[in-house]
Image (cartoon, rainbow, N blue to C red; front, top):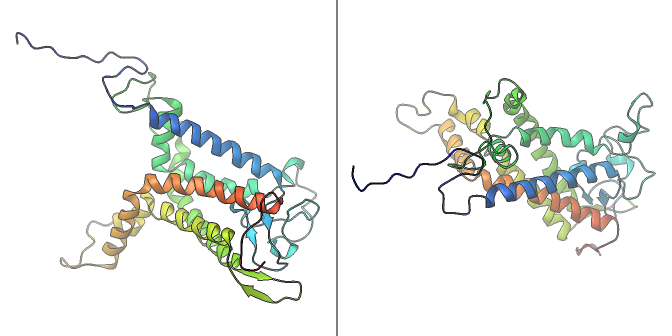
Length: 285
């Protein structure tokens, strides 16, 4: 038609016709995700200053990256009392990797880490940010053949199974938060109280739970696998559960990043209190 022009998008990396700041989100994903991975790797290798408090049997503040405590090495600073260990006593002599001995956190991080790495939202986020195929909607990316998740990334299909372990960690971290409200002195007397650390530890499982229970796989378990969730048009428990999970799923992205950042913040706070860099304000002192 005469006088009509049509804009044609050229192929190539970062070619686009968008007028917004499309690059901002993938850039933030690269920065935040990379910083978090670097920090948790560093913190997991330390094996020290992961526990802070005045109790000897229960309570006090425990870094979420070290929960649950499989093993405790009393030779390092900031370690928990032996009563907290699931496996008391020295680390098995047959364990071949000596540099892992000082930090059980590396075993713990593998499970929630796999859940997040295979998360449907995080997949889209880091595929765009790191692989750039494509980096954003309607933006040219690296030309590559797509194999789905049945070749190199086939392990992503484990996500629905890692969900069960992730749910377990929500209860474990909730129990840690509960214990943080109770301080036990040398005489074995427990006193209820609260501090800045208890509130931080309480918010942690709340955000992680909001992220976990908003998982797409959880939505399937709540009733998404059924052909119908009503009983002759009436509401059912499955429909009510599915509606609740759907609300969390609608905010899955927000809870994903909020819980990720809060885990790191909680770990840093406990580490700073344990090392004496800062003093926790609480009702016990």
